[in-house]
Length: 187
Ligand code: GAR
Image 1 (cartoon, rainbow, N blue to C red):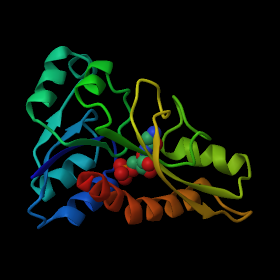
Image 2 (image 1 turned 30 degrees about the vertical axis):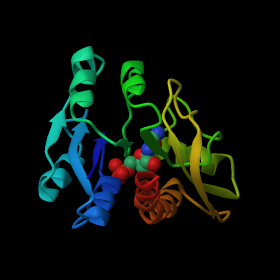
Image 3 (image 1 turned 30 degrees about the horizontal axis):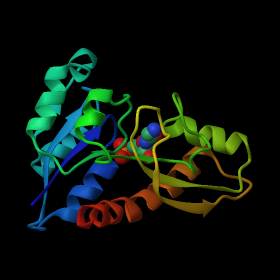
């Protein structure tokens, strides 16, 4: 049995997709959802999916007690699915190459602090990029700079808006994120 925790801050569409993808798979269990935002719709989704939610505030998140709590869960992977806080070094040390993130752009472009969600798509449109895409990568101590596992790109037209780019990116995420997680679990 492979044990996963999914960290979320927002809508939770990736959480939902991953949970549905692995539903009924006897080899994969989503042990819990960790959420830092009491207003996140992802909380509702997790409840509907029957996955326990662990709410966390910033002080707690960066404490050794929280790292120990995650260590005790004996996870095979931590999946960041729209999670916006930096992961403490202590947690990375407990789970080296076991924490993965999805970023809604073709890293190293449009990455780093402040580049998340719609801000990424706004910058991509402002720069009139011909392509955008997704990057799935390992998490290290520096925002959005861990080793890249997978990228997929999509062509943009000259009249894209941040919303239209977001829609294209979400489709890429939905199609690819669970498949890549499954591949990593099998390695
Ligand atoms: C996703 O597009 C994900 O790539 C992005 O946040 C969105 C979360 O959507 N992540 C980042 O920007 C990380 N820097 P969701 O909550 O509906 O899954």
